[in-house]
Image (cartoon, rainbow, N blue to C red):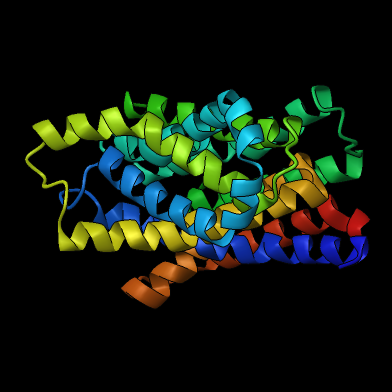
Length: 298
């Protein structure tokens, strides 16, 4: 595949990947009382990691010495992307609102753009910055349901600290994934990172399994973990890695702004929840913003 074709694929994935991630919104809503956060994250990334490793088994065996030598980077990325981003959001969701979660997560692309420009020296023009601002306005319009006065009435709770930590972790996961290049292919690298994340998650999941009244293993819990492993795990993280490699962290960061819009469509299709006018307004702001950020790929 030529370089131009790879870039076109990466731009297309910007609009496809949020559909995979939106499944996680439905899983998060069904998980309380069915499976604990760390247990869910452990099962999710164990299954996703085994999928990555299965498809990349030849490469992983050939590069086994390099993988062992680079274990520290894998553990850091696994802790950021699979432990903190995988379980802490569920912990925060116990004591904060969905609105607060969405507002805090909306900060991540802005942080990624600023830090990637200062630290990774990625080029980012004023027009692209306007695109980020436009997309941010669109997603906030959706989160606030078109009533911007609600922003002044938002109440913060202890759970917001968990969400903020997950947002910062995702920012640095994205940046370090690009900062620390690897000779491994995207799938092989994600297999190693996923299993490193499982190792980090293991003691926390064991503690939940020992002391929580919610069973660690159940049919409903395994179904949720499997769904989380295949779509928002295997498919979304692989697509995100491809986008980072081809487009850079700053340009890819805006993919997060499609999440609330795709989640609304998913909730309409699966749960029968209505789609409102503010969703259309949000889409009308987010899509031009994403175009401005990625217009260099034309």
